[in-house]
Length: 463
Ligand SMILES: Cc1ncc(COP(=O)(O)O)c(C=O)c1O
Image 1 (tube, rainbow, N blue to C red):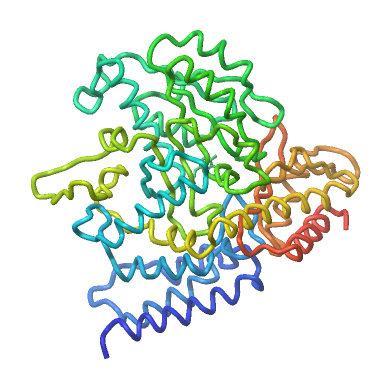
Image 2: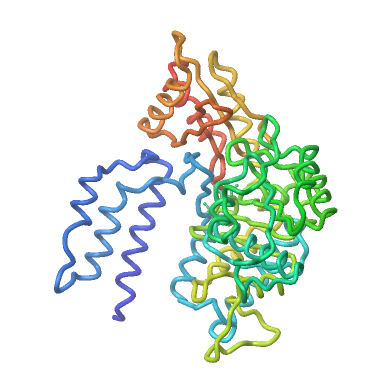
C-alpha cells in the first residue's frame, strides 16, 4: 500500500471522532498543562517514531487539550467554526499542496481565488474589479490594506515609498475612531506610521465613530491622510456610519480603509445591509473568512479598490519567477511569497452556500444574539449593555447581595468557562467588566442558545 493511505485513513477516524464530540463534550479543554507536556514534550528522538503512532498520539492525546471552537456553543472572541464543505476543501488544499504565489505553479488555485474574489466583491457590494488577496486573517488583511494606502497616498505626493522608504517622506496623517481595533494600530506600527501618533475621533455610546466629529479632526490634517473606519466593533458589533464618514474623508482626498473583519459580512444580508450603506465607496477593506464564513483557520481577505496599487504596494518579482501577463499571480495581492491556496475553501463555501446561504448564516447568528440578550436581560440583576445590531452581546451581572459588579461579572465568566456547557470570554466596556458573547458559528441552534443562557444564569445564581 502507498504510505499515505493508512495515515490519512487514521486521520479521518480521529477527525470523525473529534467532530462527533463537538456538541457533546465540555466546550473548554479538559487536559492540564502537565498532561499535555507529558504527552507531547521531551527531547527529539534520534530514530523517530512510526508515523501511524504519531497520528494516533495527535488524535488521542491532543483532543483533551482542544477547545471546541468549531462546536455550536463556543461564543468566545469572534470565532466561527468550520462548515463541512469548507473543511473538505481545506483538506484538498493540503493534499494538493499548491504554491499559490504564481499562476504557472497552480492555474487551478489562481482561477479559484480569482473567482472567489469576484464573488466576495459582488456579495458585499464592493467594486467588482477590486483586487482581492487571501491572507492569514484580519490582522494581515488590515496590514495589507494599510500598506496599499501608504503607497498610494505617498505616490500622490510624489514619493515612492517602495523605493525611498519613509525617511524624509511627506507625513501621513492617520485618523481612527476611539474604538479602533488593535490590529489597525499594530499594522500602523509595522508600516512605520506609529500607533501613538494617530488622531482619534470620538465614538458614541455603542462605539460608532461620530461623523460630526470627523471634519474637525480632518481640518487639522494637511497633506496625505488615511482614515480607518470600522464595520463591527469587537465588543458591541456596532458599525461606523460609512456614508458620511467616507464622503467627508474623500472630500479631503483621504484614503479610507474599512476594518470589516466580521461586520462587513453584514453587507451580505438584506436585514443588516442598511447599516453598511456606502461601504463600497471606500478604498480598501479587511475581512475574515475564518469568522462569519466559517472556513477553517487561517483565512483573511484583503481587498483594495485598485489592484494595480495593491500590486505596487506589496507585489514583487525576480528573474526566476515566471510571470503570467494578464493572469493572476498570487504574489501581486498579498505580502507573502509562497503560501497555501487558502482561497480554495472560501470558494467552496461560497459556491455551496450561494448568496442566500451566506445571508442565512448572518441572519441566524444575529437572531440568536437577540435571543441571548432577551433571555439574559430579563433576569434580575443581569444587564445587557449594547444594542444588538449584529452578533455581539455584552452582559454585566450585579452580585446577588450587592457589592462589586466588576469582580462578580469576572467570577460568573470563570464559572461559565469551568461549567463547560458553553464558552465565552470577558472584556472591558466603558470602564466596566463585561461578559462578551459572540454568535458566529454556522451550527449554533436556538436550543444551544437556550442551554447556554440557562447555564450562564445558573452560574450567576439566577436560575
Ligand atoms: C474588528 C476586528 N478587526 C480585526 C480583527 C483581527 O482578525 P484576526 O484575528 O483574524 O487577525 C478582529 C478579530 O477579532 C476584529 O474583530
